[in-house]
Length: 331
Image 1: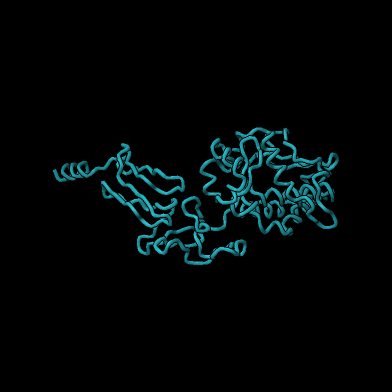
Image 2: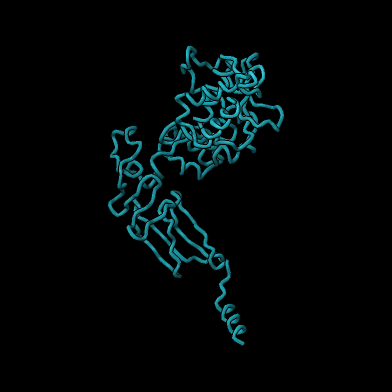
């Protein structure tokens, strides 16, 4: 009888998992405006003053959304928002509590300023993100406000594309987090992009290396046929890049996920490994699979990449991949 009563009490206290499901409805800045339950019924309504101070906070239940202004989590004890690299105090009219790590690039702004004092139009997730932006055909649209670096964003929103084309400086005032709302990062949509679009994106990224000195040589796109070629070879080949020293061409295809596609990762591979290592120095061109003990020289390409200045700017996964591969070929 006791077990039966216990089970009945458990059933009485049972909560449907969907009762704990809530949907987040954001505004143009990514800030929570409405929170609805699984049935679409509003449980919280939020509005903000320009720098994130709470203006309206209405509830129809006990649910309290933690991720509110620009989608950042608000610490319940301090009232500060966690913005990745820094904490933000919205009650002091928009200031961060520590210096912007990229403040040297914006000497005219306070290093504590939130999104260049323009909170209605802009967001500033952490002061360190930056990305080039392309459309789905591979056409370069511009950079986000911090410059030409980081993971490429592919914008598929017609409205934003038109706005960019008519207002040339719009991207310079937007962060990667804002722009990514209208598109996807390259790695997320590469399989859906045409070969010509990928060629154009890779070529544009690499063309920014024009005139870069590497050892005794100076890089020029004209030396590799003026572009990065899409690789139509064996689909099973696990390589983002390949080169032909005889044709002086470099081929590319997004084929696997050993490391992220970023400006620095691509430039480091093309400039140091493919162009300098294979094309200029001829390392590994006889037998790329041969290790050092087998008489191979491919290990020198990996060694050169690791020792290059660009390597320090690449991602952690990229560095791990190159160090592991170097260890293999240098045996």
